[in-house]
Length: 200
Image (cartoon, rainbow, N blue to C red; front, side, top):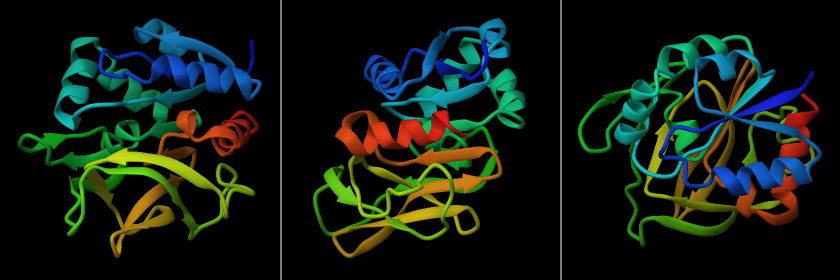
């Protein structure tokens, strides 16, 4: 079956069911991936995530998915969502220092603003580098909920602003995409984004 999207299930991904539902609504075929063998059988990868960077990496290690995931990401279209985007980076600084998947040269640090954290609710994205994932989504609003941000200078696809602070809201490098927002909670805009991912 071609164009099968593998949704990584690693214990911490509390948003897995709503993501699955949204991808199906967008016309995609989804397989929930629990182990290395299932990972090999899919064409595309979606890494969900709610929770902490440290927990996410240790869950992937525990499920023996960390190294296989690194390898598969190299060649398959991949979408990291919220924490799933953050763990694509080199290092995370949540509850100490944790090594990430290191496919994007970036660090994940706390959002420092004079406003309420987490940054929560609908916000716009400013597309810096157009790509197929964000096609026709320049003026859409997406749902955010995060206390940490990815600090990266080379792979920024879009920026957003919160309390006068600009942060990376989407990244793109080769076949790898990441969004800081939750498309599965972003109504029609989120479905459009998943459609774009299906069509990659």
